[in-house]
Image (cartoon, rainbow, N blue to C red; front, side, top):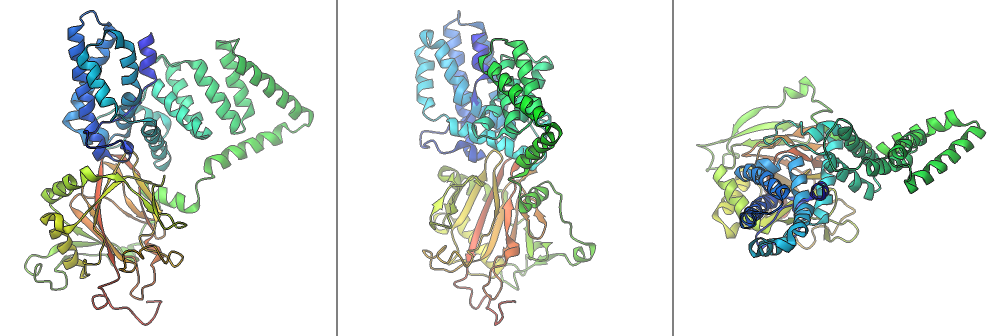
Length: 536
């Protein structure tokens, strides 16, 4: 029973080689894959310990065998395995909590091999921030893609390779994390799911009393006093001596009595409902709703008349000598702003080279703070990125030349190639690539002017989610490995095109790798001359 309690209170994580310090594992699937091998190594050490200690507890041996089977599956396809957000969450949960509980359980009789391995590896384990980040990612996916808790708990997601499910303990853990963030809406959803699975007969060490305690308070905080009372009564049926529940019940009864005296029961009931609805939607501004709809493939659709104006073609880079005999395939994705996609524009070999160069350098992606002008991390950008220069690899140099040939823009003033890998629920909420007039110093240190255009390579397919969307115009561009999209951020006059505001939708299932090149104004004076009118 003690071991079962340990099993239900764990968190997931990954490990990196010693060259990596702990840095936000949950923000990059690329870094998380290294932790799969770490967990596999720990399982091997644990099995050696079991062989040396034949009298070891039978429950530990069963646990090790279960993890052995899981890691065998995971190591065969780490990125595919971690592409399922539930697998990623459970991995963080195991390594952050469960392995530590196991260490405490067997510490007295543990062989030197396992304890020394565990001690060394522990310094590279995910921490509470990783577990919380992975949990928040699941909640973000739930909201963005309109997933009910049962669907997510059962792992019924589109395009999954390795189906996984959440236990009642996992659901309880998600509810607790939402509770610590004062997110009572999600606390209620996940505590109810945990309770539902227990009511359906799931064998678990999760305690209904604890679940009902969190659930009743979360419901009360959202204004549903009657439901809170009903849940508290159910708690007291299980534990009549529960001190906090008895106190809450007396308080609820007092509030109800006051309402009846004032003859406001029906009015207050409507108010509670309005408060609950307001709470659920207060963070969803109009742009947020459009963004999430586009991420789901909903929202504005182009009219047939406009659709007829979009074409696919062979493109030679405006008679560029390199492409006259071998033009590239190009297709229109959108008309205003004009977004074009280049097909088969980067090979699998080049993609693997870029990924291998970037992976050791991946660090939490940052954004410009409009107040300080400095780079900082932000909750609305969940990914890791690295920068690659053309001089360090002929492949990167060749890619830069290709961008210059096909856009007709000078890349000598462009920023380095940025490579990004999105983690669990990885996203980048709506933003502009160019600096607005209220940010005159955004790129001052570069001395190359504003970002005139964006080139974005898709270096992986994504099973579900992960689209690049433009909420202002209703465009959704879906990842396709080996392709790239290009658009101008500025009009020829130099004014910013506000219709290019875009976002990277959360990755629901899969692993998203992209790389992008931001081209700047300097050097383009004769390649893309400015106009006399700001309106052009």
